[in-house]
Length: 481
Ligand code: ARG
Image (cartoon, rainbow, N blue to C red; front, side, top):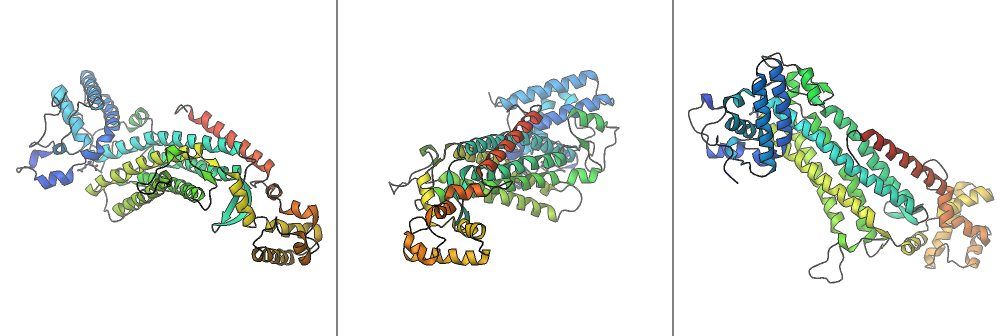
């Protein structure tokens, strides 16, 4: 099924009027972007369809010509999607490929399509449409992750796990609190997409190469055709700005950093020394030499991909920083960073969702880590403050001494014999002592909005449920979850 497409290939460039010599092989190889920008084919066709309608509206195309262009473009769409379409680096980029194929298919009318347009406004428009489409895909993936985190939070209100600072056991938390901490991060990411959308959803067509076009292009009409929010104010800024890509890449980096932190937790919590959680076999790999190994590669890879995505943001910053106004060919490279970040982010979101879905806690290991880590020492000090009227600094000192004895005795607050506690203070005896150091009580004392007490967990879960419901209602118009 090859070869019927794209006859216009090698020697004759579509912009070749003034050129005598054939393009050198190195120019062709360095200049082509079709190897990566072919993924813009849909957006390029969508943009061209709107542009063609606009041309008909101002009398550049007749009705019949418009119809031919529409037919031709839909045939091209079909050819590309069915794999019949041939790509050649001689045709440089996706814009040239589609235009050239259109002329093959419908003859001279195809040559009218580029009236009142430059590839400079065209490529910017295509990329904007592409980002808007991918935002919807990414919204779905974040939403699924949020749903999964919330589900796990609901299931684990009664599971107690260690919370860390400095990677040292700090205080007990309900496992739901842990899941909801990531829910909060990814909710912010989801909401950040509104800003990216706002900067991206702009009509650029009509800006031409950089100064505008010599035709009365109805930009308002094009804006509505492409369902965009606003129209670019200045044609020079329009063809040279990549702020929308920067914003997207910043969003992607931030979201990846969140995914990477979760990955890091997973790597630590699954290690032998911790063993707080277990990953399902299906998400882990073995070692070719060590038969006992079960490695959390998926989390490590996501942590690794985060470096790539951050580099992509950095790469675009560097690409832009020295560019004189307006369009410069350097900008062709912007898409490499963008496409890679889109791919890495999407696969990573899927990966973390699977980890969250399948991870299993090992509560006894978490409990013993909490005990070993004196995680309720602060609660004991607070008990002295509250019940025994001891100033906090003194209480801190006293509990510090108790911890020191435990360390010497290779014991913990729970197992240290009563007489040893009593030696230090009469306050450290009886049932009230155990109540003061209880892991569950410690959580439930954190009864502040946003805290890890049970009722506060239920409150947070309720809030998050409503939030997801709101998102669902708002986005149902745009995507089906
Ligand atoms: N492939 C080019 C890009 O991605 C399209 C724009 C080309 N414009 C030009 N003036 N050569 O930037």
